[in-house]
Amino acid sequence: MADKEAMTVLILMTSDVHGFVLPRDYGTGEPAAKGLAKAGTLIRRLRRDYPRHLTVDNGDLIQGSPLTFYQARCGGDTLHPMVACLESLVYDAAVVGNHEFNYGPGVLTKVMEESQFPWLAANICRKGTKEPAFGEPYLLRTFPGDCRVAVLGLTTKYIPFWEHPTNIAAWDFIDPVETARVWVPFLRREKGADAVIVAYHGGLERDPKSGEPLERLTGENQAYQICTEVEGIDVLLGGHQHRGVVAEVAGVQVIQPENDARQLAKVVLTLEQDRGHWRVSGKKADLLEVGDVPADAEIERIVRPYEEKTQAWLEQPLGRVRGNMRIEDPMAARLADNPYIEFVNRVQMHYSEAPISCASIFADTCPGFSAQVTMRQILANYMYPNTLRVLRVRGETIRQALEVTATFFERGPDGAPGVNPAFCRPKVQHYNYDMWEGIEYTLDISRPAGSRVVLLNQGGEPLDPCGFYDVVMNNYRAAGGSLYGMFSGAEVVRDIQTEVSELLTNYFLEHEWVEATCDHNWRVTGCRARFAPA
Image 1: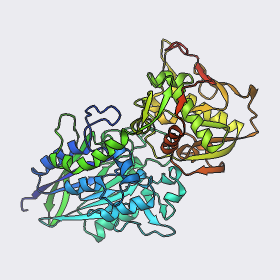
Image 2: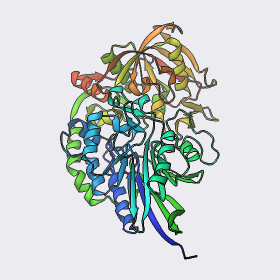
Image 3: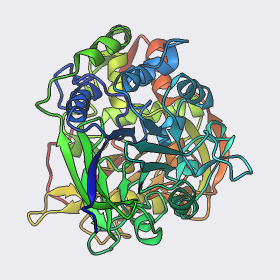
């Protein structure tokens, strides 16, 4: 038998870049160990050592930073900066992520038309059909020696639970497992793929070793299911969860990087030729940190004019705050009513005319508002393009939602409050802790989960479990996704189509001064105090 020939193929992948290009924090202006410019240096460097290579972005590219927000709202006909960067770095393909739909079909269509690379999404189909909506849902690359490597794009099917219906009216979101069962054999048998890579904008729902669930199995993340139920996959490129993973599931190499281009995913495939056919004989996966890597000069040059306009826009003064609306201790701000979250709730109530509101501090990095408020502060606090929806729900539904909110906390051995690990893994979900206005409530976290709401009133009277109440919340929460399925199917009283960040902006522009007020309508008890009450 003749000696087997061998070759290596390099696969590089970014995911959940969210519009972060330069290694700088938009809120503080300080250097940050992230950004596509740093990842770009690694991409160019690594490809020099591997003549056979593929570079893929795995979704959530065009939303999430002030740069992409400004481009969507003020960029006009200019080439999208993220497309320009991927073109410079010679990406082979991009996968459609859930946040690609946030700015509506017009922005997404424009981005796709500008791109020289294909956008892959086998399970996003034209309404009422099984036809992939964005052209061929796979990339097939033939390397010298007639070695064929295929990349199939898949996207989380959970998008309809989050996205505003008008943004996705033209498409159906099919189960990615069922879709992979169709396309993977097609790529193997009909297209002669020697290696099949699934690029899935979704994450691992189960522990890769034990198979135990890592989260409530809603269908948002199905990477484990894809690997264990679909034959013929060599590598699964994951994302969406904003956490680094290198694992093997049912013989499939799984890798996903952290968000904001903090990491670059690298997979090296070794293929051997045996009796005229190539087969994968080795797989090595690594997550490469971008921390100490210098930014790519060409990417910096490309993005500079976009950044200059964005930075000028971010510094626009909008209004003034009288009093303290800063978030100095995120945990303290979630343990007792605070002026920042009260302000957000009252703005939501003002524009929706709803008597009850709930809102979140999305991340521990949210700074609140200083005395002089700018666009930079608005977007540092409210980085998602959410709109508002008023639901009519029963009092018991509000209690159920508050019980979910109360599971955010766990008590340490010394009685100090901490964050339930379920809100940190498989990804940080601080946005799933809500604080309410228009009702009075107390959460006692010394009690078992499910019985922590010890006070729930409105106007001093207990909330009627069977009575109906109008509540305003963001569209993500109102859709019942993630932990709040109790809201799914509730009567929609009103939709406010203006994004919340714009409503906050308008409120400051409409008022010369905004008072930092706090009515202390809610509190968390049953834990050791972390701060002195205001």
